[in-house]
Length: 138
Length: 138
DNA sequence: ATCTGTGCAAATAGTTTGCATCCTC
DNA sequence: GAGGATGCAAACTATTTGCACAGAT
Image (cartoon, rainbow over all chains, first blue to last red; front, side, top):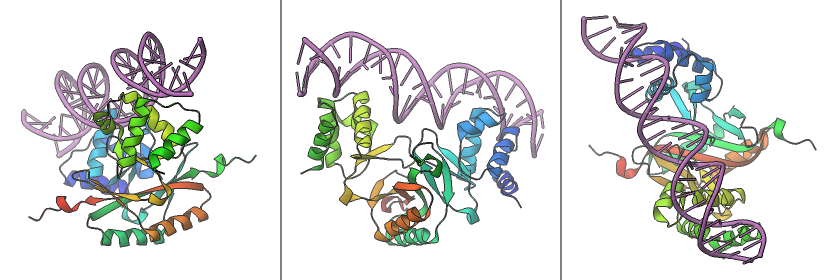
């Protein structure tokens, strides 16, 4: 079952109704590889901005989507499927966003989570620098 | 030499002039333990909001201050002294921000930085969950 | 004396909300 | 047919910019 189908089902079970805007947002998120801002979605979809934000909020609350804050002006949103857990590399120059995953990093975070007094249930890691194309050849 | 003195000096050397707003922002950042939002500073200082933002921008560009984006509405700013490198725990419920540091985590990040094609020069880690006081005993 | 820092107010950008209408169940 | 979903426009919040003036060098 695709993530999009899973998402539709979970929303239905949560008592939400289906509509055109929601369907479009879910389909788009289902095919994107990495985070997308709400405004980017607005540009690409034939749906009202408000409906996009409302759908994203529902998806986030059900744990279907993760909001990722890489420091730009707009927040990014990406689907959250357990097997695809990853973090982000951000180019300071062009803003390029690239995903990466690393087991050692996850282990270190788990260790910290167990040692702190906080009840940790999530984490974000962002590495910043220059992407290959912005590394000046001069 | 305190961080505040060092910051003033570096700004002077960069050609900026000293003024009341800048001094206040630097003094406040010098005494705070963790990140503070620009609006919080505005509330606490007798300085114009615009000047606060302008000072923060200068400080950030000189590497004296780090902007930290923990996902709330406003961005946080905290002084950046090499010996005090740390990351953040954020309470989902009350927004409490707590710093932590971990050598294993840093090692894992260094390893990733060396292995990627990006030229990595910085990173942020945010752990999310519930702080001790928000962990409901009921 | 010059030229930058400051602070007010207006402008912007992202996000949220109010409300009339459309569509799903 | 009832009630939630949608989309427009207005409201809001954080941040930036324009400009006149005060203050630092």
